[in-house]
Amino acid sequence: HVGHPVSYPDISNTCYGSHSKAAGMLIMDRKHFLGFMDFVCDVKDKPSLTNIEQNFANAL
Image (cartoon, rainbow, N blue to C red; front, side, top):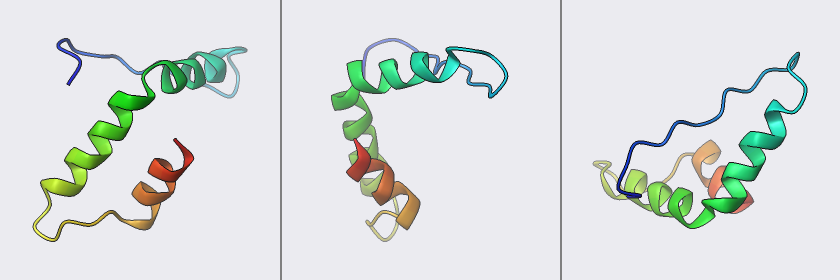
């Protein structure tokens, strides 16, 4: 969807700042992540999101 491969930041509970990199990516590319969630829903045999998928989409 963004025209190039995107590597999600590696997160670690022991590496200071790694969660902020991941959070920043979610904020900056929010529309792309929401589009991906729409794609996930559309390609299923029964188009719907699981609870965790829906919670993630709602959080965005």
